[in-house]
Image (tube, rainbow, N blue to C red):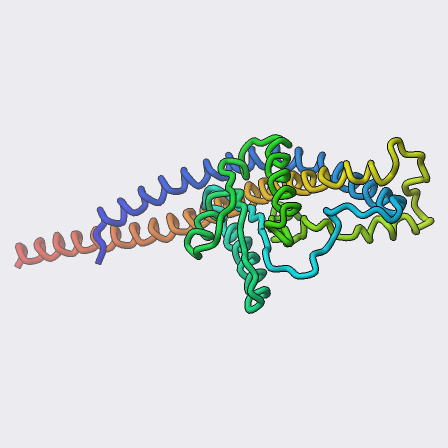
Length: 297
């Protein structure tokens, strides 16, 4: 049975843990506000960029960019996996890695070679553990401060690998920020660039104004070929912003739950301490009373 000293030491240890989790919760909340502001300001740009791209694709004529062409046989798949560098964020990284495992499992048995570009230490550690080929990794990006140039650098390497035939397809796995309480793992194709069917449907929707017919200089085809690589950079950058925001939200929630668990544990230990102390005092009183009665007798 634990002594009073042991219980008191446990209470002190839990209180120190609570201070850490509460501080981490506050830091995550502060970072979340900044990341969410940046992400939400970029979303409209990414959406409008896709609409403009879809409009140009409809008018580009018969010319087809190599970035749009599907390979006859897919044997080499490259995956961009976005995870965090640190833990203590609940099931955030586990959900992303589970998404990656499910994707790979769905492609097994077809002789496909997989390679990875990792944003984050957790994804890199998983790839090393599973013996996956790592073509490139970027540490200190997700959850930290980064610029569009980071996506530009990664995107250029991916496009070069695709055009050189090193990859037949390029996919990206990231966490989409839905709300502070909900982050959803997403699997999306980067290359070849998927058909922009949504843009075509929006163009046919007469209830909302869409891209009116414009005279393009240079031609629509030339402009499209120039914008297609930029689309890859935009999608990567948006994925990184979404994942960073999701990480901070997940960590804030995890640390909040940990702080609540510490409070519950402190309450339980304090109750146990008070009961043990009361029992010890009662035992001492009984000894005193018993001794006094013995002296009287």
